[in-house]
Amino acid sequence: MEIKDYCNNVDLELSTWKAKLMDVLGKIEPLSTGRKEGIFEEINGLQIVLTELEDRIEKLRTECPLAWKPERASIEKRMAELSERYSDARMEFFDYEFGG
Image 1 (tube, rainbow, N blue to C red):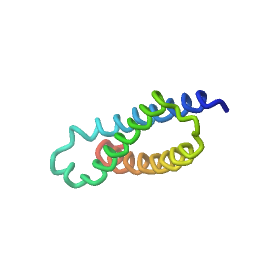
Image 2: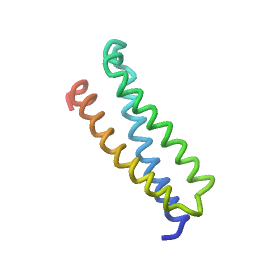
Image 3: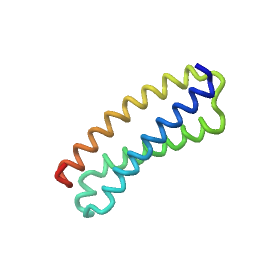
Image 4: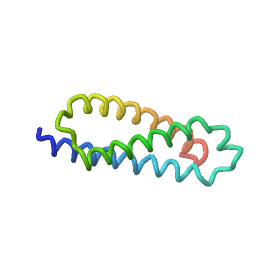
């Protein structure tokens, strides 16, 4: 796989995850302060992941490292964690608050 193709594919996938996380955080925003306090750690964790995604996307768009194999392992590990965290968040927030 060409390096540029890899960077473009990962950029697209990370951008999709970013949109999903922003959607989750947007749906959390109207919750009551008390409810948000009860899930502060989860919200904070999602915001940290969002920031990391934005950093990685920017790096892929501006640098597209020539030696991408070490980055690839890190990205794939992080994406697996993100998938799990996203699924947990959807179950926690949407099933409870929105009758999912």
